[in-house]
Amino acid sequence: MVPKILMIITLVSIWTSLLMSLTTLSGATHFWMKRSTKLVHTDPLISYPKVTIVVPAHNEEIVVAQTVQAILDLNYPADRVELLLYADNCDDQTVNEMKRVVETPRYRNRDVRIIDRTGKGGKAGVLNDALEIAHGDYIGVYDADAMPEKNALYFLVKKVLEDPERHVAVFGRNKTRNAQQNFLTKCINQEIVVTQRIQHCAIWHMFKIGRIPGTNFIINRDFVKSIGGWRDGALTEDTDISFKIMQSGKLIALAYNSEAFQQEPERLHDYYFQRLRWAKGNYQVVIHNFKYLFKRSNWRVKLETFYYSCTFFWFNAAIILSDFIFLTNICFLVAKLFIPELELPFTFGENSGLIMQLLLLNWLLMIVLYILQISVALSTQYGQATTKQIWLALVSYFTYSQLFIVISVHAVLSVCLDSLLHRNGNIWVKTKRFNN
Image 1: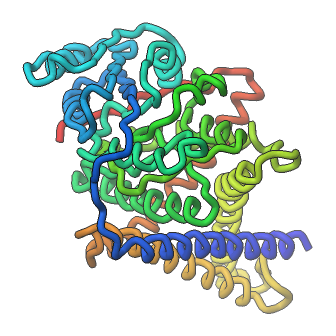
Image 2: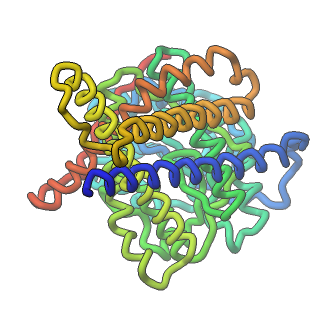
């Protein structure tokens, strides 16, 4: 009886995940079809609120100079930008690289401060420190490896001005600046394109739900102060504050034309521990907000909590269980060649092939949907939709995407052990940078 129940739960779970994926894909397709014929203009804005841009940098000597220069060259009035550069507990040449750019003749009169910080709290701590000294109406954040496109800030502010009372935060899109470096970065690029151009666009288009990314966003300074700032030491301070904003009833708006180019890990080890940190941080946020599913709270918080819970807990568990069922039956089929009386553990009645066929159908549908999502996402970016990308998507499904399951299991176990052993699990693992 138990094997049958497990099989039914697995099948229902996978079909539910497929339905949710199709829903977001449909929403994103409608979003882009509505905008496919629209021309984008950069006409003067009705006003130019002052923006304090914060760049948290921990041992970023390789990439920070390019980022600082890109920020200082933004298409936004120079006298309306305050730039705070934080060298956070650095033991390399990050400060010198910052000074080298800022002290060039063309930038000498700009409103820039370089802070050699020795405090605690990680990135969230840096942002809270900046919040205390910022003079801007909005706080903008760019990671040290994230080079904003020339009009990135313009489009963020333009979106804010559409509804300043509700749009307390606005986020743009991030692209991989080292996408062609190796197989890993090519796969990461596809993942980010799908996340940015399918998931983010769909949930904003359908539900007006936004998610603050780690970089390329602005947020109202007074509002951030009113909610207590960022949570010091949070592994994913962006997800954490996103839930706070939604709980207040305000919106995190999407400025889909605002782009920044960030460097992604080029080695498997760096990628694994970066994504492990992200997964742990997301699990912590979901666990913290799970209670709002059963309390009176903002409906967007409920929906987002449900989505994260399904993605990180329910659907991951279902995939692992389906793999276990399928592989177990395969092993027993091989064993039956030598022991004919052996019975398969997971069957529906005497028809042992039915469960195998259903699981195989589920797998085929997941592969097709995976490739379809990537193809649609890439088709919205000039020059990205190629035959090579389709073959890469197929290969990455059996390699790169399966790694996420391992990371998720590792993250769940780590969060549980942190709680049971009362250990500090908010340890930041530095992502290695590369010259490119």
